[in-house]
Image 1 (cartoon, helix red, strand yellow):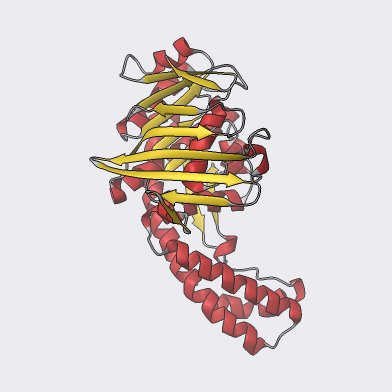
Image 2 (cartoon, rainbow, N blue to C red):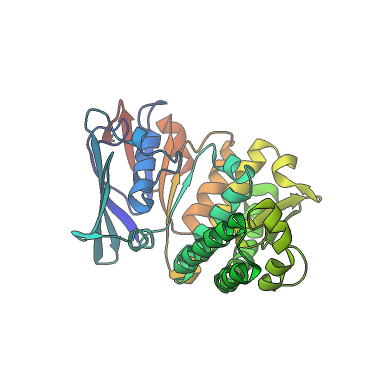
Length: 360
């Protein structure tokens, strides 16, 4: 699937946008603050209903407008799906093919979108929550039951934690253990299976992008220690300690994705440039797995490609993304510099200046 048409109104500093995109290569050029990042951010918001840069929604809406609207036409061969999101300070409305829908997952599954900017690799280094989010993004797109299972798990976890804080009897807490473990064990199996797929792809891209000499090791930590996969047993063993602390300490909500070099944390060992390449390798691995499991090309949004990467690294990265067949929207400040990385391939180039977008 690809994003064919995009219309944006009232989003950040962008003036009204109405563009037709190339099925593969789209370059966005302009000075810092011109609106390049905002355009990529708007596409991500269309598909996922949130910004990849902030959890706050109010800064996304232009004050003079009071609301925003983003419309996209998604194409799969001769099938077209029309997606529209409208938001003001009070509510959000999502429409698919002209009909209002309640489940955003109906839109999110249409076109897997990855957003990468100068802060992405730092997010992965920021803690387990960000790495779980990365892992679960992929599981969501390959496992139909994942979303419902995760909702069930979060609901059971909330209830168990409330029971702990209220000091309810063991029997009542253990009743929630059963529900927590039922969804938690299935999610753990999905994550483990998905991890095994992306690990192989990750090693491939780490080498392809020029760092194969560094022996990276990646491991999945399920969220509870020990060789036993029996989550109900671990919950029972930790019950008294959970009572003292007031929350559940073991479970899939404590899972993590670890990357190490020479048994050291890769996010501490590697340079910033190497961390950025590592993050790209992880994201490319995800899209590669999706392509295998869903025949989905995916959409890769890359903000400021030249930042912290020399020309050789940029070219290797572009080759890897194009080999996947992904649709690309890539931004940069200098048009000639950006175009040269793609070596004369067919493309569309858009220039942004003070929020106004025009095709070159």
